[in-house]
Structures are given as C-alpha cells and as structure tokens.
Length: 100
Image (tube, rainbow, N blue to C red; front, side, top):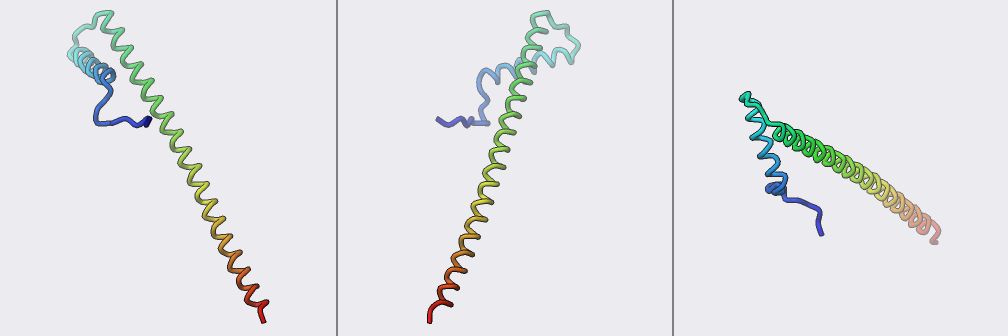
C-alpha cells in the first residue's frame, strides 16, 4: 500500500484541528479572553502542528538522503559502465593487433 497522501485533501482530523486553531487565534486577535479549556485546546493544537511539522521535516531529510545515496550509486554505476566500455575497446584493439 502506498504511503502517499493526496495533498489537496487534508486529513479530516487535521483539517478540524486547523479550523479550530483559526477560530481560537481569531478570538485572541480580537482580544476576546479564552477560557482555560480553550487555552489548553490552543496549546494542544499548536503542539500537534509543531510535532507534525517536525515529523515532515525528518521525513523530507530522510528522503533527501536516500536521493543522494541513489545519485551516488548511479554515478558509480555510470563510471563502471564507462570503464567496462574502455576495457572492451582496449581488448578489441589488442585482438585486432594480434591478428596477422
């Protein structure tokens, strides 16, 4: 099963959390006092967003490292192919020179 997610449609839980964040932040911006429960909810939402952002950055860093490793493997394979082609050309030249 693919781990890809459709970025056009956020997960329902995250979408609800973000909508709640926007409401709470709008209230704070207007100077409306938050209840203790709302302040706790705001903190929980922000911590969840930070945690998801951190996880996304770790994932992106891992993917970038994997890309770099594959690029190095590709470069090594291309160098080996070039070397093999040169060896073949040298062998063919030696064979042609050895024939009467």
